[in-house]
Structures are given as C-alpha cells and as structure tokens.
Amino acid sequence: MSSEIIKSGKTVVGIEFGSTRIKAVLTDMDHNVIAQGGHTWENRLENGIWTYSLDDIWSGLQDCYKNLAADVKEKYGEDLTNIGALGFSAMMHGYMAFDKDGNLLVPFRTWRNSITEEASKKLTDLFGYHIPQRWSIAHLYQAILNGEEHVKDIAFVTTLAGYIHWQMTGEKVIGIGDGSGMFPIDSSIKDYNQKMLDQFDELIADKNLPWKIRDILPKNLVAGEKAGTLTEEGAKKLDVTGALKAGCPVCPPEGDAGTGMVATNSVAKRTGNISAGTSVFSMVVLEHDLKKAHDELDLVTTPDGEQVAMVHCNNCTSDLNAYVGLFREFAHLTGNDISDNDLYGKLYLNALENGDADCGGLMAYNYVSGENITGFNEGRPLFVRRPDAKMNLANFMRTHLYTALGALKAGNDILMKEEGVQADYFYGQGGFFKVRGAGDRVMAAALNTEIRMMETAGEGGPWGQAILASFMLEKEDGESLEAYLANKVFKEGKVESCMPNAEDVKGFDKFMEDYLAVLPAERAAVETLK
Image 1 (spheres, rainbow, N blue to C red):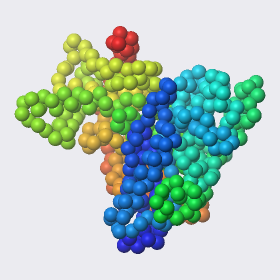
Image 2 (image 1 turned 90 degrees about the vertical axis):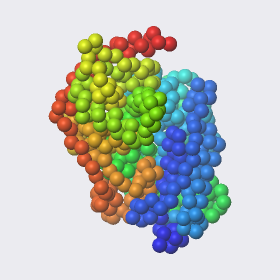
Image 3 (image 1 turned 90 degrees about the horizontal axis):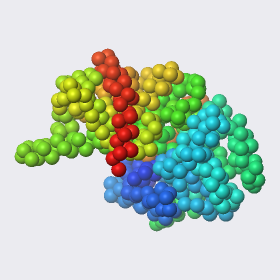
Image 4 (image 1 turned 180 degrees about the horizontal axis):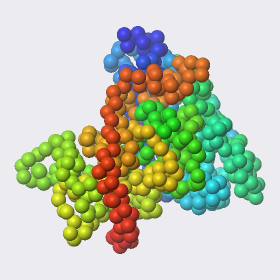
C-alpha cells in the first residue's frame, strides 16, 4: 500500500535543521512516519562567531534528503519523485543578512552566539519588551552599533529556515512562530508589532541607512497559508539526482519551538510543553499579555500566531548524568555491570520513594555552563550540604533531580506566581523523562501542574513540520490548527498523566528557598575555580 502512496505523491516531507542533526521524515496523509533520513553536523567557532557555512547547510540538506530517498527505495522499491507537500524548519533566531543580489554578507550568526548584550539591553529598554541576545533584531542592531560595513548593503534578513524556504520557492516569507524570534509580534494582527517597527526606525534614523526595517524582514504567514511552490531550481538543490519533480506546495517555514508545540499538541491557550535533556525549556500559550517585561521570559508565538511565554535554561541533565556515571563505575568495580535502564530506574525511583521531599538539607547546582535565568555567564557544577543534613543515596539523587529543574522553576515561578499565568498541563519530552514515575513526578512538583507524556509515531521537529504541511493541504474553511491537531492528528494518541503530589510540591518549594539563598556559593565557585 505504501508503495502506491509514494508513487501517487500522497505523502508529505518535513525537514528540520537542529543544532547537531538535520532530520527528514516522510509521512502518509494519516501523519504516520513511513520513511526517515538524517545528517549529522556541527557548528564551528570562526573569528569568535558560532556559525555553519553555506556549504555545511547545503551539503547537509542534500545528504539528509538523499538518505530519506534511500530509505524510501529500500522499504518500498520506489524512487521519491512526487510529494504532496513540503515544509522546512530550523533552530530559531540568529542572523542571515543578504544583499540585493542574494549574496550572504557575513557568515551566518547562530542562536548560540552571546555577542549582542548591548543591543539586547537597549532594545528591551526601548520596547518595554524583552529582546534576548539570540534574536535576529538584536544581531542586526548590534551590527549597527558596531559600525559594521555590511549593514548599508542589506536587502534581506532572515533565519535559517527562512533562507532555505526562499531558496526552494523564491518566496521571502516566514512562519509567524519563527518570525517571533526575529522581531516582536502583535498577535492581534498576526504580524510584527507596528509601533516597535516605527521605534526601531527612529532609533537608527541618524545612521542614514538606505532601508527601513519593514523592507528587509520576511513577510509573516500563519499556519495553513500557502507559502509558495517548489521551483525547478529548488528541486535540483534539494535532490541533486534530479528525480524530484518541482511544483509541490510548500508551507510556511517554522522554528523548532513551533514544530515542538505541534508535535506535542500544545498550541491551545493554557497548554504547555517541556523539552528536557542537555538543556531544558518550557512554553505556555498565554491567555493575555504579560504585565511587564522579564529578562527571564521570552515571548514567541505558536505557528498560528498566539503569544507564548518561554523559559529557556542552558543546563538540565549533564551533571545528573555525570553522577549516574559514577555509580555505573562503582557497579563495574564490584563486578555488577548494569544496564542504563536499570541503573537510572533504580537510582531515580529510590530517590522518589525514600528521599525527603525537600532533599534533607543537601544542595547542588548543575551549571556546566552559564545560566541566564539566575544571572550566570559561566557555571561550575557544585554540591554542598549542611553538616547535619540527611546524607543518603536517596536524598543525594533527589537533590540532583531537583536542581536539574531549579532554573526552570525559578523562571516559571515568575510566570505563574508574579504574572498569574495558568497552564492546564504540560506535555513532556526528552531524556529527563526516561524513567516514568520519576522525571515526570519531579517536573509535576516543580511546576505544580499536571505533566502528560505522549506516545506517538512522530519524530519530533520534522514530524511537527510535516503536520504543518499537511494542515496547509487539508485545512477546511474556518478550521483552526488547534482543532486540526485535536481531531485529526492526536485523536487516538495514548497519553500518560502525572498529577503533582502535594508533599512533593511543598518540598520542592522549600528546596527552592535554599537554592536561591545559596546562589552566592555558586558565584564564589565561578570566581575562584578557574
């Protein structure tokens, strides 16, 4: 059956550029993944800038697509020549600036760069709206402040996903979720904030540049809108064999935050999602605007333009995994090699079953790198305890489970306690949740909110982008993205739920009192342990 589907082009392709993997999925019209492809890549530090070269981008995309086509051929004996729809997504933010002839003016500056502190602060003050360092407008304004020669020649600024889409279709557009990481969005008009555009033009008026900010940003499109078709040139750039035919519709290019929301069915107001692994971030779709700007909170949008508050933390499981590694070494020394599943399971579940709810006077910081939420540019993993603390294995591991979410809780406490934002539930995904009944229980305690875990056939971000391409194809008049996901994508999905335990919530709050109070010790470690 799938070979007939492939031959007839009743399929959808979603491709996402992550920070370490470019991934592609082919789905049928019921959103089942029927083939996959991938390519591993790494960013590089050149002249103090984290970047990927254009060669990295194109060779990576072409290899990823080649592997997808090879998977199709191996499984179904068919060449991938016709597809029903296509969509591209990528890590958000960053800076790609082009001249009128389409030449890249400076190497791609990715989200990872922290080189726009002056611009970020000045724009936040000007707009009364938090502008993180990684946003495109912060990169642009910093280049202006630096007096960079290329600025006068700019004709177009976009993100990585926006660039790929432009090359595939000729259209200088962007999905509004990705656009919300370029410049602030006004959700009431589903477009850039007009007042802030004017403020920015006034701010740079004395530079006498030959462009206005509106002229060089991509046009925002919301989920479901058509964003162009795959051109002959685009098809050849994607599939170097020439087998892929041009002409299929392409949906608006999105950011990885938006595809994550789609892949976890978290686009409705009062819903949220959490991705917890090496780093951790949470997102909540807002019912109303925040009262004021907070440096700890980023504002982006869903792919259909609704406001989302994001708490983004640099550190989560790295230090926790390092301690688990110590116990793996000890087990090996005693001749008792143990699988990772058993090791994590025994340590985590013992921590929850036998540890004190407040960790018994133990404290740790998992700051392998700096942590913006608590104001650290650098980090030093740290463990400390009171002399009379209840030092046992359960409390030790519970402490490291808690501190993996310490910065996330600090940011969400601002959102929920100061701003009064409410979430009905969060969908969780990532390595932190690998032991059910542990990671989900700790997260429920940290956020005092139901945590849901979903079992789908999806492949994360590229699957979310494929769903957005399907929505563009199949959308009925008046049908919202929220309704499409609920009724046509996730209707039969299995969901596991973890409700917050009152004792855990109380204990985590007590732990956080110490966490915030002992931060000067972490500061001293950063300053003295060189």
